[in-house]
Amino acid sequence: MKYSVIIPVYNSEKTVERCLQSLLAQDRNDVEIIVINDGSTDASGALLAEYASDHQNVLLIDQKNSGVSAARNAGIEKATGTYITFVDSDDYVSEDYFSALDKMDSQGDDDLIMFASTTVGGGAADESDLYHQLEQMHDRGDKMALLLSSRKIMSPWNKRFKRKIIIDNKIRFIRQLQTGEDFNFCLEYMLNCDSITVKCEKLYTVDISDSTSLSRKYRPHLDIQLEKVFKNAADLIRKSSLDTVDKEKLLCITDYLFIKNVFTCIAEEFKANSPSYRRMKNDIAEIYKRFRTPLCSKGCYCNMIHRGLRVFVYRKCMFPIYGITLFVKGKKFAKYMEE
Image 1 (spheres, one colour):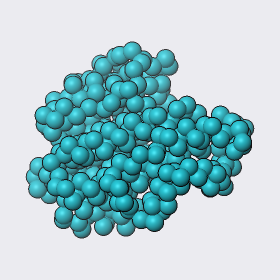
Image 2 (cartoon, one colour):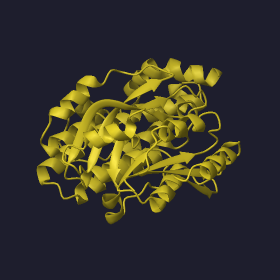
Image 3 (cartoon, one colour):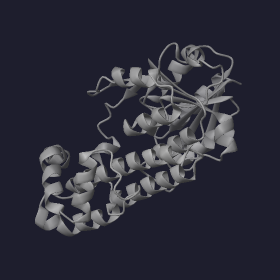
Image 4 (cartoon, helix red, strand yellow):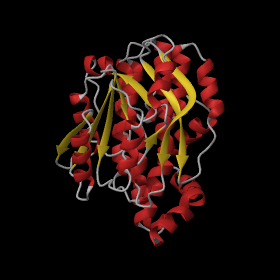
C-alpha cells in the first residue's frame, strides 16, 4: 500500500461524504482510507459503516469519544501505507491529490512534502510568495526556520508524511492537549527529516464555514495548554540532532510565537467576560506568569517586537498589552458573546 489517509470524524454527517468522495473518485488501488468514528452522536457512524461496507479500501475504526489526537493515533496504528496523509472530515482534496503527490516527490522518497491549500467560507491570505520562497530554499536549517516562523509547520493536513519515520521515532499526537497537538506532532516529525520538499500546488480545501467552530468557543485555561505546547516544542528542538546554531534559531522563533500568545490568551477571556481591565487584572497576571520564562537563551530575539513583548511581560506591564488586545480583538469577541 502506498498511501494511508487518516480521517478523524466526530458529528460530521453534513460534510464527511464530500470528503470521502473526493478521495474515492481518484480510483487508486494503492490507497487505504482509514476513518475513525470518534463517538459521533449524529448519523456519521452509520454513513461511515456504509462506506466501509461498499468500499474495500475504506477501513472503519469505532471508538468512544476521545478527541482528535486519540483518533489520529488510532489511525496511525492501523496504517500500512508507505506514506500517511491526514484529512479533516469537513475538508476535501483536489481531483489529482494522489497523482500530484507522486509528481512532487523530487528525490523519489522525500521525508516530508508540503503543499498549498484553498480556503472556503472565509477570507484567506495569498501565500504564494511564501511557498515560492520555500520552494527555492536548499538549506534544511533555513527551510525549517521559515516553516516554523510562518506557522506552516503547525498543521498536518497539508503534508505527506513517511510512516517509517513516524513509527521508528514513536511520533504521536499528544492526547492530553486540546490545543496545539498538531504543532507538536508536525514539529517533531520535521526535526527527524533529512529532506523537505515544498510545492505551491493547491491540493487541499479547508472549509471554515462552520459557525460552531472552536474559534468561537471559550477555551478555559488556554494559557496552561499553550504553555505545555510550546515548552514541549522547545524540548523537542533541544533534543534534536540539529547543530547548535540551528537549534538556537528555532528556539528563538519558538519563543517569539510563544510570547505572542499573551494576546490570544487575554482575548480568550473576552469570550467569557465583557472586557474590563479592572475585573480581569488578576486573570491577566496569571496569564503573564505562564509566559514569563523565555524558551531561548537570554538576549536572543527574532525582532524588536519579540524583544518588546519580552520586556513587557518580564516587567509585568499588563495594561499596554491588555489595551492592544482590546483594540485589535475586543470587538470581534464581543460579537461572539452576543451570538
